[in-house]
Amino acid sequence: MVGSTQFAALRNRDEIRTCKECGHVNSPFPVEGWGRPRQVRRTTAVRAAEAAMREAAVTDA
Image 1 (tube, rainbow, N blue to C red):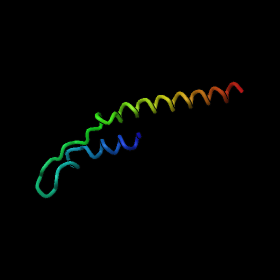
Image 2: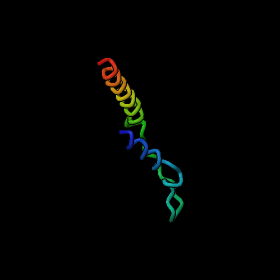
Image 3: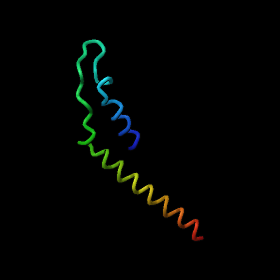
């Protein structure tokens, strides 16, 4: 999920969306409509929480 959001950010740059032949600028990919940034934030938070819990379990053992 993180990679797909990063890929979309790269693909949505003006120089990538502009046709080298005619100069037409394509519309950016609508990442917000897919909810990917929100999913990435939530997944990142959950993974960080899981890592913290695992680390705490190791230190308490």
